[in-house]
Image (cartoon, rainbow, N blue to C red; front, side):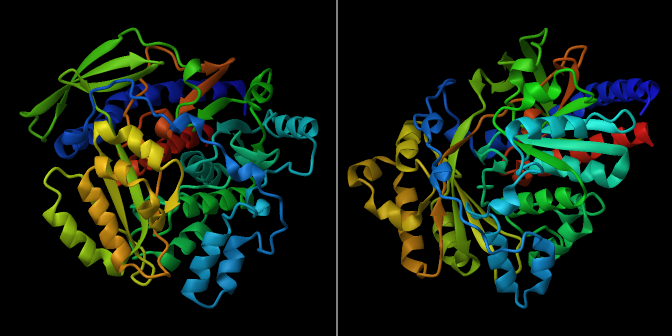
Length: 471
């Protein structure tokens, strides 16, 4: 890749980001409008709500002793060898187990940290190819890497690094065991066909079917097969980037690189978001800047609410659960979504809104993911203080579930939308341009296409821009 191509790429990336700004605001605002329309009774007043236990979680993963897994580390070949759908589904759950180090190893696991760093730097030091460092090996970073590698092949070297590790060279397991609502056409011809073939095993035909952590594992293995390399070490970024031949950095960290993003000239930006195509009805927002991101406010109140998920509910329980919810959901405390898996595997996802007065109680109750049966053991006084509809719903689920059903309550999370707006120049990490994707660019609403679908559309458009410059 010569200097002319590099200059052209820099120009086109900058043009893409700035021309994309209005489209990004429109897409991001869909989540804000949903929250105001359906979750308005649960928006909170406290801008700096204290998430008591969120920042004090202890990662128990590192306490597990390493055990040799008997699993075949080519999941695509292994899935083909299994005879039944249930065996395939069980295998998909097993490949992300904590002790399955083989799947989660990076490309330099057998090397010392020092040697691994040298080899990683060498991999992205070619003068002939495009060299990209992707920071963050979650769904967006992996989708970008798969997508661009499929388009450019040998013309690009992609190194994906991540510091969420069990030990040097081994990434933490993917933990988001959440149903997805992603159309399969988002992935067709954008990732390796072996990935979409697995989607076909479990989906209803039009959607990918698998859970989010399964999707991440499949994308990770697909990247490895396509010679994308991985570097899983503790805070490796500076040593990788300084005085390197990297052409640009992709920020897929969910916003952890915010300190490298410049402040915006305007601290408060007024926006009118149209609610229809005629643009004769709209909502007025003010975007206020904090930590180099802008956060939406409506009528002086930040758009933010807290929720938790109930996952793993078998589809056969759906009628009984929805009957109760329809009779007790005047304020939309419950959001129920029937998954897109094939019927014999399909599940129901429930997202429960949390009132402001109950937020700290739920952070106390759900410090980690728990089996739904554990809820019965919680302090009765504490349970009596939260919305009784939640307690009653859990009682109904416990009454109708069987011993085979594995239903879990997930820790609380916040929908606190933000968006990155730029002035004149793109941010840089040392002298390397940073391109934000996924939640590093803006945070989507889990109730609007999982908050992920529109990120994948944006990423595909970004890879098309890069490909035009190189080809």
